[in-house]
Length: 497
Ligand code: ADP
Ligand code: MG
Image 1 (cartoon, rainbow, N blue to C red):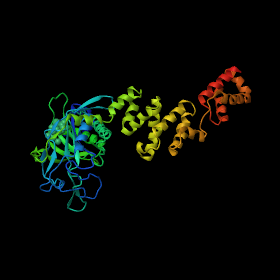
Image 2: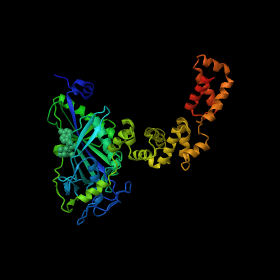
Image 3: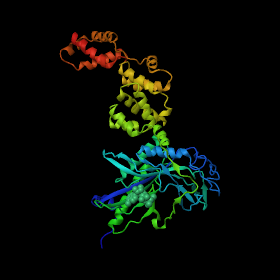
Image 4: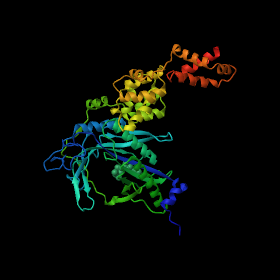
């Protein structure tokens, strides 16, 4: 009898794993940042007491009618435009029927046949520099359900309907993802985009962005897709990647042992790093979709679309391109600076007033980010305006202050006294350095006069003494000379003697 292959053995057996290809399609739900719900005026404020953000519409009392919140369509279209989707002009909503205690209507209003955005794509870059083109199938609008709360120790289920009816978009990819790292980068990119577009806070830990991963495997070269498993309940991007890694090995183990994959929904346990079966596809609901009769079709006119296009913020990919080409930054710097929209915009503001882009990037990625991280604050709470960083750059560029003094002393003084200019502060703290010949030369003369033998030794060929003279001169000036300039003048003075 052949021995059964275990998942543990398989993880170390590259020959077997290498025979297979991973196939993943992701479904991402993003909670839209609207003040009111998608089909009612109920508030969406997070963290309220249970069942306070509810009205007869959320509770689905008979005779109540939903009405589309226009802001929802606008935010969904923004995402579609950012991903190059086709925007549907004629939109209807559909009912997806199922019973669950947190769904008071007994159906969810969603878009089945006419998603507001069709097609589109995201290009993502993995660590090895490879770009993968991930096609989107669709982005559609739907409403969220409430929450069931199971109290520990009790056998009751409590229902909080505050979240019921909150606006979501669901972003669905084609099965184009071929590595768990690609899923990680894709999710990071989606999160960055929704934050740039200000349509969702992108917070997976709090559930305002959620991901279902559809995972299958197939032998390399096999044209048909394998049977997929849907994994839910990953509360971080890293866990999406871990869940996919686990599924890849689990599914190959089954196949290598002659078993077949069951179409099912599985849940990810982050502590164990494993997925567990929740329900099999056969037991899943037949949703009996049909057009929602209580909502009129929603038409996207040319003018409406043009208005949304005109208000689109700059996108990370555009800024990345600009930073690397126009500003000549490295891809690494541009990547870090475009990671967060507010940092990118702050950088842009500096660059409108200086052409030393590299220095601007260094200040932001160095001292500024260090300060923000230390205090755990956002750049919007950073006390210095971009103009102040420009002043710093100019002081260093004109040799009035050394970079090391600027970063070790002046920067923190500026942060403490944001109302004072960099110049004023540097003067007040006596940090300005001398780079005029007239100020430096007498000090050099004095030092050379004190060390006649050493001057002689230097002239006889002991060039190493330059460092000693430099040290003496800097000390005599209390470190306030421009070192580059001082070095040059000392050398000249020694050669002249
Ligand atoms: P379902 O009807 O089960 O929801 P869909 O065809 O609507 O399936 O696809 C849902 C998601 O699953 C999409 O993101 C799609 O790309 C992905 N998907 C479909 N088939 C596979 C497969 N064989 N392997 C991995 N992902 C898949
Ligand atoms: Mg699905």
